[in-house]
Image (cartoon, rainbow, N blue to C red; front, side, top):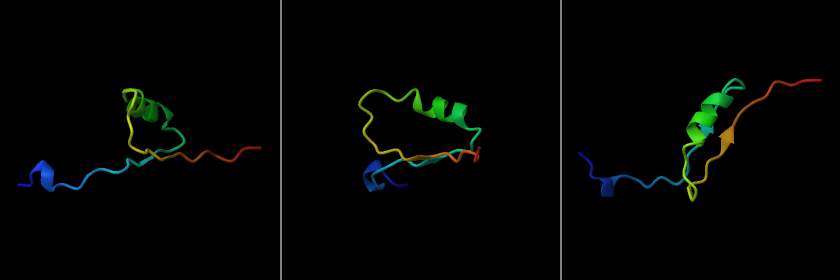
Length: 50
């Protein structure tokens, strides 16, 4: 079993969600504490309109 020292460090968290995933993103992001420092690119496509 690997110890925590053997595991690679986390440098970023990447999230993808469908256009209907706004509530899921809020559930993931809202509990994060002030000072959370990892980069977190978030991709969410929106339907083309007009």
